[in-house]
Amino acid sequence: MYDEEPVFRLQELNSENLLTLGKKLDDRPGSLQGSSILMALAEKLLRVRTKSGSTEPLQPNRVQQAFECTRGQRNIVLKARQLGLTTWAAARFFLKTITQRGTLTLQVAHTLDSAEEIFRIVHRFVDNLPEQLRGGFLKTSHANSRQICFPKLDSEYRVVSAGERNAGRGLTVQNLHCSELARWPGDPAETLAGLRAALSPTGEQILESTPNGVGGCFYDEWHSAAESGTVKHFYPWWLEEQYRLEAVEPDSLSEEERALTTAHGLTLEQIGYRRQVRANFRGLACQEFAEDEETCFRASGDSVFELESVENRLEVVPRPAETRRNGELEIWLPPLPGKHYVIGVDPAGGGSEGDYTAAEVIEAESGLQCAEFASHMGGLETARFLNELGREYNDAWLAVERNNHGHGVLWLLESVFHYPHIYQQNNQLGWITNSTTRPTSIGRLNAALVDHPSLFMSRRLLTECRSFVRLPDGTTGAQPGAHDDLVMAMGIGLAVRDEILEKKRIG
Picture 1 (cartoon, rainbow, N blue to C red):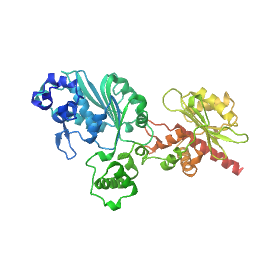
Picture 2 (picture 1 turned 180 degrees about the vertical axis):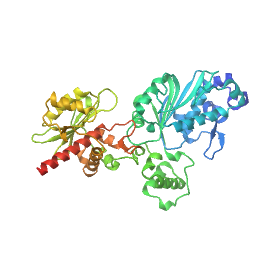
Picture 3 (picture 1 turned 135 degrees about the horizontal axis):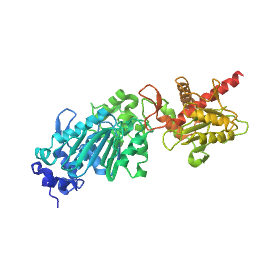
Picture 4 (picture 1 turned 90 degrees about the vertical axis):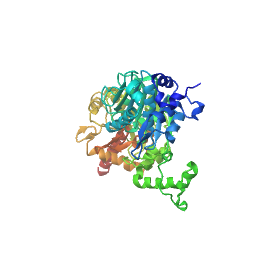
């Protein structure tokens, strides 16, 4: 039998019955009518600031309740904006922290400002606890900013930003919440790996974010969730009850709007809200106010390439006719006698992490993509492989970017392997990427994707195009956690191909 009085009679809560409840937070006794002990405690103990600005008891909304019903030990949440998942993660983990001895909870936000906001939510929980708990068993101490310690429990609650170096290192974490993972700075995958290393084998994990384009750490985590035993949760915008405006006229519904009302039971007031969202957010509406698990990733107002062309080609790209080197080399068209080829190359420094060495084989006359290579390898191995690949494709022109790691590769190709056709720019071996040549090469690739999408065979390349965006500093490149090595290799290859054809025409 459950002793339910501690849940409902706050004045009698003490260390003993709090710790007893901590052992069965997720139990659902019949008297709670489907609610868990944790949810009942949240309503009785915790206070939140509402959208109107008042401080009220936390009453789980539709999304928060749905999460509690399907939650597992490992969770990933794809959602529309402002559905209350960050607040609920804070509430859930806060209650676990104050009812279970030796608990360390870590919440990681995408920016410092967001970390401060989450910490204010947690501080509000503490400040509004019953006096007999706040001044006694749950009396707090503060080791530093955004950290609350409960000395009598040997438990603590920390909130950090993903940009803080060594976040989570050296700790053993029982509860980990990663907020807005799709917008983490730097290398989100590396940061997440470090945090996971700190998570106890029995610990609970919540990865949560609104989408931010195709590709990147969150996108990869979402699509690989089944392999890691992670529970997926998707919450569209219409689960928020406040997302309603004046009802539209029934006769004004478009075919798309009628399909939504039929499939999801949307009201005319919700359709009114949807129309305003689309007017205000335009291309980002599908991203910020997600409606399904696929199109929400595709929308990006910062995309460099024409996404419609990329998506249409992705639906019909053929499988490679041959793969080598455990899939690193994909071949659609083998070399044909009498044909000329260009190989665009974006070399990297080797090692198992970071950028790839990428190579794109293009048939010179048509511009058709024939083969593609992507692998982590060092300079000597890269030069040896390019020598073999170039000779296989009729002594193709090797257009190797000479920035950074390219110098060594070019020297090896010329001096050690004596490769016959190495592209030169301004009487120097290799292609130089700078503020002039980079936009030009990317522009050629974008134009080709729009005008001749059938030239492109690679799913890997097109996926990189999806996540190639305009960055905050005004430059272009892969969004955080994604790669652009194949994009750069193809851009170089197409630019050199056009240059070679132009010289041949003039000559």
